[in-house]
Image (cartoon, rainbow, N blue to C red; front, side, top):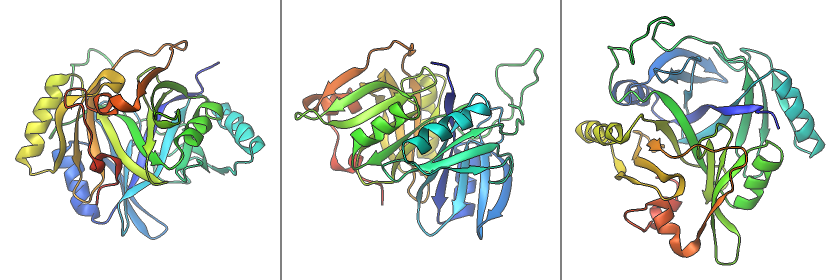
Length: 309
């Protein structure tokens, strides 16, 4: 099967205080502002990580509440939008199509539809390429004028759904994602699943919780030292750290969780493993869920399963 969906393209999140969050994401997290606009009466700020070539990977939208507006995945070819439109509509899913730049600056041609969990999902092709701050000939390893933590790229999004199995079937059956890991309850139903298209442990994951919920979105760091140093920066700036640097059992990755100023949970992530197309999914049992999520602490509390407030 060809790789039609390549990776997570961007997330758009709601923020009640746009200027405070824009300052946090640019000055503390170290993302780069690429544009602003007003859509449907709400101002938006467009951001990218330094090593991303395309126009944006995070969009902040002024709104009364915080949370996820939509998640967007990049497709390889324009024809892939037709492919998925046919599959979705055949399955009875309503699809809406948008021309390039119709949704905002830098945007490519896109389709949008709702997952069974109520999340708005987008597939996009042809985002404007703005470069990664490095020359294409004889580049240094990284720019010299980066600010804050400066993760090189967006990595994954982790959402919540009342029916994890329906969400997983939708993404694997219609959108052609591959299941890498799952946490199963004692009665056999899925408590959490981890799905990929980019040969990483996960591009999107889902855990039991309220429909439409955002658990977190994550940025990639190059190594474990980057995670530890980022936690120092977060603490220095008074950012609320949810989980101090530690390790996951699921994905084998290293992590720290924290909150933006209005309540959206962020993660810095590194490690993991390469996923081949014939990768066999890994299963964690309900008794080992604590170790699956936080391998060292071996436990999770109720707060982990709720949207932050």
